[in-house]
Image (cartoon, rainbow, N blue to C red; front, side):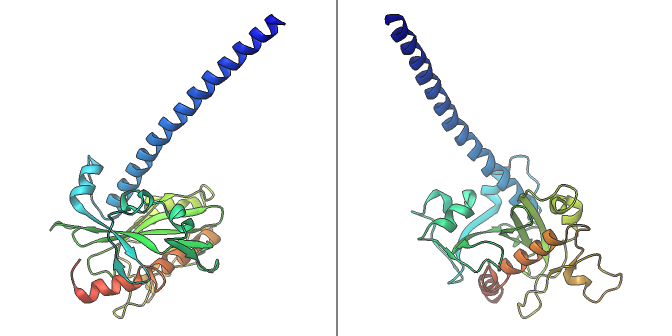
Length: 259
């Protein structure tokens, strides 16, 4: 009996030690993963507005005016006192959408999601360089197989597109997954997002845009064999640029003429 109790004691002791080690490792790795995720998103923000930097964190702090926008009121809100998941450099769309204080329901046909935050991050390039005045917006919406997360940047006229990037997606490799291909993303640069009255123009075509087309200035070639992902990108870009997204705040910036 003593031998059995002794063996059980050893097994339980080992199990407790292993459990403690696994828990400690999970906590430490979670912190490291969060830092790496934050850094990766900062790299995407800098890339989409056209800033190359050897040290992304330093460049982000020096060049980017990060804001949190109340989309309903079309105005920035103070960051002080807000939870970490609402801070622009670590914004967690899913957590903010679930938070009853800052998120709410939307019709699922809009972007394939049932909830979204009322507060969303926006990034303005400071200074006097070639990228000065560009604005980056967070894009989120359902694709064919996954939720798509990315950024779209507008030129300082707030009408032409400076770039687009997707930092998280799980679409079909070689088909819908091509939304992460730099060659396809390059097709967006210079396209018209808005007309002079602030109406959303940009569209993702079902296929290739015919040469000489009168709509070429505000259309992007769709992805071959990825009709549903193409449609999803078209939908989410137009949504976030539109009246239910950043549209009213961007219209305010155009009227005021300053960032």
